Image (cartoon, rainbow, N blue to C red; front, side):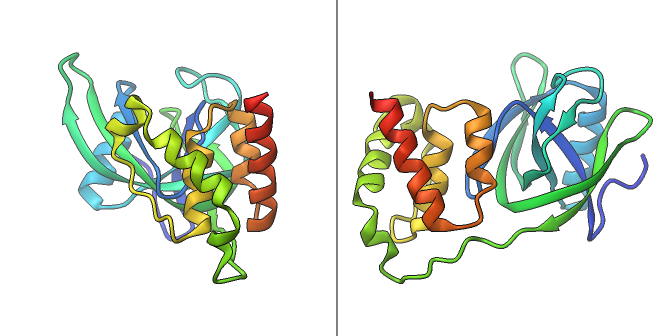
Length: 200
């Protein structure tokens, strides 16, 4: 296999799903290009980038993607009862992807730039979002979400916003717009607007 990982280049895993930092996602792997990718990542102890598809499909031909995604690590893997290879990935941080290209087997790679975590300008920022915390605690009680045993740092406004962005029932394009926000205050405002629209 050609080079799929270096300090400034990584393999891309296009999905119809947006994954936020600190959140996990189970995947069932069956395409040969991704089986090779996963095996290489496990062997060499590195991750890859999950990125939202802008045009095309998850299976088959190489799709077009957005430029902001998340770098993920593989935190668990197993052979599933259906014969597929199952992995659980966890997003570490946001990245910007440029110069994407496809290898002969269709596996995409791109140059990656780590994006900074939006700064929490005020140490008491978490005290200004009791409404978001309350919504997140309610979502946590849903049986499906409860099974995920998601770890949430309720002392961090950024973590609350990321986990809430992941769990809210919104279209991928809406979640992509949340992922691309660099300012924490703007993300808080957008989440409040989104919750108000959902609750109408």
